[in-house]
Image (cartoon, rainbow, N blue to C red; front, top):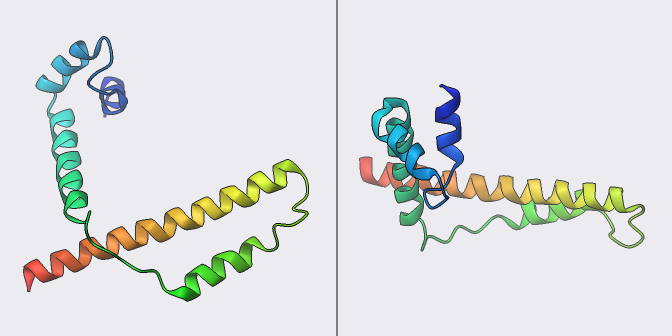
Length: 111
């Protein structure tokens, strides 16, 4: 992947100067393939919009137990580190739920 392709992937279409990047995207097969993959992913995520996936209660309890007591949490950097770990755990749970939903939809469609 070329450097221009990496820039094109992160620049929104509505930014000034994006017309030049749009011309690159129109002629670059790598960028066109990346756009196609992105559209497929967005379409699959849109299908999951109304899907409700409930995480097991044990996951919530384990996350909260790892965070520990929040009273007197110590220095601000420690508090930030704990919040960051909690956000990562929540993100991992969310990603697992989305991937599980995608797998279930594909299994239903195939079977």
